Length: 192
Image (cartoon, rainbow, N blue to C red; front, side):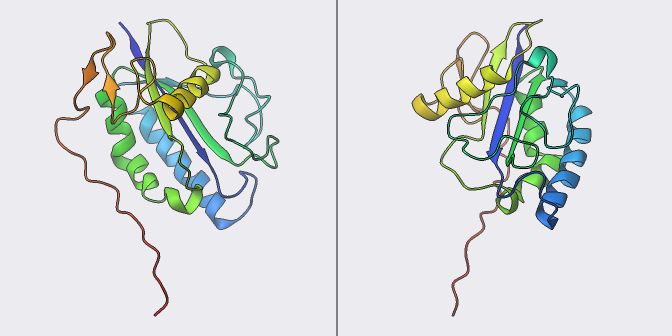
């Protein structure tokens, strides 16, 4: 039975090694989110480096998940001191379970703070695709599919929660049975 791969990518406002309050909050929140997602129904696995220090993504041993890779539009550092990105790669039993994990609970709360931590970009922040049972997606798979969604839009081999497809390539009208409350948008307050 096919499984769902989910790749997420965002460019942080400051490097992961930054000792500032925003980076500490991002890490503290991230630890909570990972614990929660790891217990979520439908979660199967996520890419985790076998070695390396906090913030070391490039050059770490990712095992079957392959060499760490990033989209072409990432232009910041690649060392443990200068890397300013957050990326995840995970496997799920289906669309609904992955969607629920992303848009409810601790991850939903983190999404509400994303503009404090991440640069605003015109690139997609996630891509999903179906993989055959027994296949481990690689970081490069995620990158190439995210770039495809950015350049060409969703398709059966690379799509988003908003525009999804079944394993057989059939368009899915809606991932959820009921709408999820949208994330409040922050607006800049002009001086009076």
